[in-house]
Image (tube, rainbow, N blue to C red; front, top):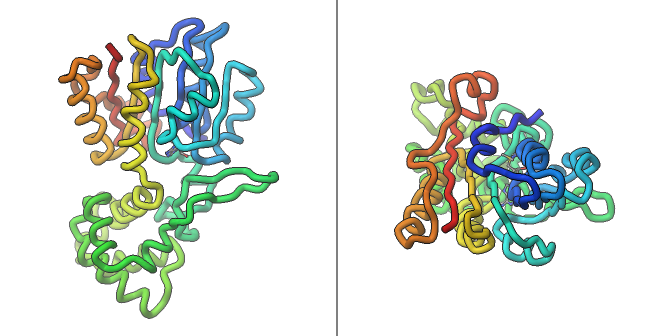
Length: 302
Ligand SMILES: C[S@@+](CC[C@H](N)C(=O)[O-])C[C@H]1O[C@@H](n2cnc3c(N)ncnc32)[C@H](O)[C@@H]1O
């Protein structure tokens, strides 16, 4: 079960009122959307987007509850303007993006997002349902990166997207090991990482595979590029006085959001509502470990 992160804060900053329209760019299991739909009744709508068709399917119950007030779209939020136009979704009062992956994808997708489960090294979010069959659409997988990219390319991915201090050593060990045996699963990759780093760092507070897995996930899904494409589109489709709320889970994403908001605030197109990013309370973190790294930033369009 996915518990929506920073739910009260999202509602406080989006401030949904009766009959207003919202876009949830990462609807997931609809935790945030459900509360928005309760607040914007009787005629307000939510356009819910997710790259993973399985998540859109997970929202079927919500669709049954709210009917035409909820529009579900299986697409990438990097195509926001097109999605809005295709669905004639005008007067957008607020946009939410709760970026990354959900606990459903870690627990139930078997696509290798977690280093704690032995699964195929895949990490793609993008699925669509064609003829009742779930198809994974993107062709780049974590397995392809690990087994086919050069040592230099691997090192760059681990350094840039994982800020992994042992990027060089891990990239070198991956290229050595894959000559002997193809690295096919999450556990095989974890073993290679353990061999690459000094023994005393193997049992650090943070699992030694955390940064490598983050880096591969970002690379496979083009996460930073999607975010950069999304931000200007979000501002352009938002009505004046409309609000944009973004929750990110690592510093690379948060930096992109922070810098973009700063640049637009200087141009006078938006007002920043969160001088510092909003973080989860101790109570929420105790209830939902995923909230630990969440950072929420919000703006209003001028
Ligand atoms: C943290 S979850 C959202 C959880 C949701 N707010 C809830 O309360 O259930 C993030 C979701 O974003 C989706 N996602 C990731 N990248 C995406 C993208 N570029 N476009 C659309 N959805 C994306 C993932 O498939 C995942 O379902």
